[in-house]
Image 1 (cartoon, rainbow, N blue to C red):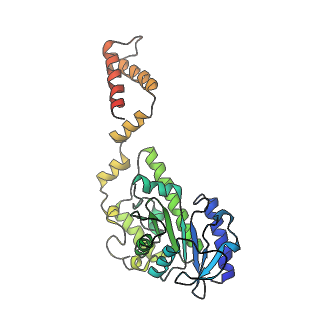
Image 2: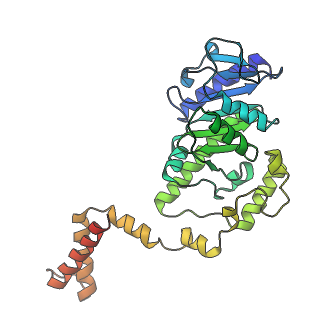
Image 3: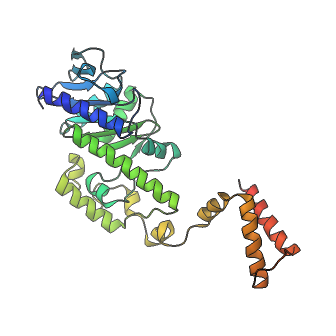
Length: 304
């Protein structure tokens, strides 16, 4: 890519990352391979929402600065590891999408097959084990997993997305956060239904052939399960029903009950007890009715 165009695109994509709440303050970094093989990247300590041409630095493949003000991003080793692992990619975007990062902190995996469009274009999104930010250990871990994925999450830290250019890498980042939002909303409603294994396999094989992906993944397009993780291939009909096609589980019902104030709960249980014991709502409470109410409230208190 011509450097002038690459600079314009990097500034625009950085601003979009900030406007879309995918990073804040000095978070994140971007890089893109130029026509001569050198790399354009953001400098350390710049606000991506206000990124300008003076904030961009050109480096070689070892990370040494060729030109520009300031020093390259402190996480440049992670970018270089991606380029070394995937000669087919030309851009890397690292950001801190808040909902997706929250999934890693909560210990909830996004390496699931839930949305057809995501399975088609990204497959499953893994979460990498925790490593200290800015270290060679983290860079090596990201490079290892980028061989098989176009988008990965780092535990407690953020996302790395790659592409043929910055726009493609940004689209993958945006898709990741949108997927996290949809999944979280479904969980808040009490149910997340995974795609049936045969459909997940069909979609992923189709996507790898139609849209491409990591060369190692494309090579698996016609294999059973393609490049999908075992979790996407082992969801049974019973598990699907438990996850979302039947009534909420006891744990979900208990969580919903705990969200209700004790005063509201006592009133509702009193009405329910009177109706259940007499067949109609009466004007007063019996000792048995009050005992039922007291027992349920105490059980909820004990379970906190």
